[in-house]
Structure formats: C-alpha cells, structure tokens
Image (tube, rainbow, N blue to C red; front, side, top):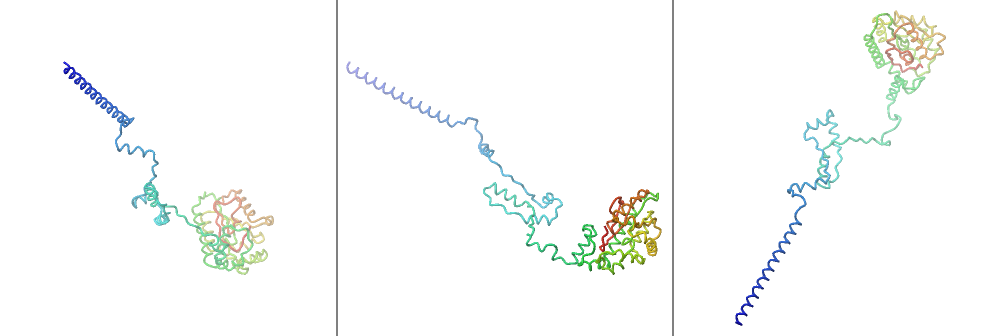
Length: 358
C-alpha cells in the first residue's frame, strides 16, 4: 500500500513537470509571434508601395533642371536660323566665341557644350584716342581737305564765307577748269530735263521755270581767272566792268536745258542779281550766246539793292505766283537763288565753289 502511494506521487510530479514545460513552450511561441508582428508593423509603408522606377523619379521633381539649348545640327539648320546673314559674317561671329568656364557637374557640362556651338555677338574694340591718329585731319592731303571743303560749300554746310581758302585756291582752279566741273554741270542739267519732261503741265501757259543768269546760264570764268578763282574778295565795281563787256559765255548744258524747257511749254523767267542798269548788255550777251525768247528778264531795281539775294528773289517769285504762274522748276548756282518762300516744286543747284551770295 505504501509502495502504491509513492508511485502515485511520482506520477503527479511528472505530470506537473510536463505541464510546466508545455506552458513555458507556449509562452515562448507567443512572445516570438508578438515580436514578428511588431517588426512587420514598423516596415510597412503608410501608403501603397510604388515600383522601383517610380521611387527613383520622385526626388528629381525637387531638383532644378538645367536649361539646354540645342544648336542646329546641320548647315541647313544654321541657314534657317540665321536667315539672310552673309556667310562671312556668320563665320566671324563663330570665331569670336568666348570659352565656357570649366564644368562643375554633368548638367553644367551639357550646358557648356551647347553654348560653345552658339554664335556670340561680334565685339570690335575701337582704337583708343592715343592710337586713333592725329586730329583735325592733320595727316589728310591738302587736295582731300579742299575737296571736303568744296563739298561742304556746295551742300550749304559752311557758315557764310567770303572767299576761297588760300590753301584751296589751286584745287578750285583745277576743278572749275577741268572735266569734273563740266561733268557736274551736265549731270544737273540731265536731271533737270528728266524732271521737266515728267512734270504735269496743265497746258494753260501758267507753268513756269525760273533761271538765274550768272554761273547758271552764263559763265564768268574768264573774269574769275583774273581774280584767283574766288581767292580774292568780291569787288562789285570790278565785276560790273566785266558785265558791261558782255563777254560771258554760255554754259553748254544749261543752254540745252533752257531750250528743252521752252519746247516743253514752260514759261521761262530769268531772275538775276544784276542791276537794272545792265539790262541792255545782259540781253545782248544772252542772245549772243543762244538764249532767246524768254518770257521775262527780272533785274535788281534800286529799291532792291539793300535786300539780301534770298529776300529779293523770294519776293520776285511771290509776284510770279500772284500773277497766276505755277513755278515748277528753279535753277541756280547759289542757295539764295533757291531758298526762301515761295519755293518752286523742284529746285536744282548748279556747282559753284568760287563765291557765296547770301
């Protein structure tokens, strides 16, 4: 009986030990499951997972992208971009490209490579004042300076001048006695005739053309040859004595223009600064040189002596218009022949570097 009780206690003890081991194993399994769940919770994303390519693109939206300008890839593309720019100008622009700074990263390298193919503005450095050469035309030949002076005189860009500059006397003489003066006179006459032929004449006998006389119809070169071709100051008394000789010569191109204008139907008015006391000799001189059938010869009266040529001739043109004439053309060697009011529809300035009349 005692032996049986010992076996029972031993069996209960083993059962209890086995239950304790099972409880310990179950507890370990539970702890492991809990730990696994916590790890999964930490690793799980808050939003649905994206693929690898989408995840790689997300950070790029936060970065500035470099500006890349693609240059034309062919000659045809370059021509399309540059339009009508000459090839040598394009080449010059391309030769002055400014080198790009060393690239810092891949994007800068791409931009720098593009910039090296773009034409840059052509910058020309002007010489400094010390390297520009002498001022005031000190190194310009006298003949060139005198040609510039003559051009300025003809264009009325000079202040009123009284005589030819001393250093330009020989230049003026060579000009008025040479082929250049004749060619200039002929050119003015041709242009005047072309205008006269195209002018809209009304056919009522009221379309007029005004001609100056001295150095416009008649040439006084023989007189000026004796007085330095304008180098001497103008002397009215000496010139009057020359006029009274009646030896002024016709300017051939002006005579041709005068005759054509008359044939076209213009009324011809001769408006001169000569005094009324020289009317007879002037008429004879004109006729002797081939000028005939003018409609009116107007000379300066005693009441006009104190007036400038511009005022005097303007007043005479106004009288013509008041009489109903339309002044379509006006020819003269002085600006005072042409300026003032009223003016003709077209005015033609003949060259004269020998003297200036205000």
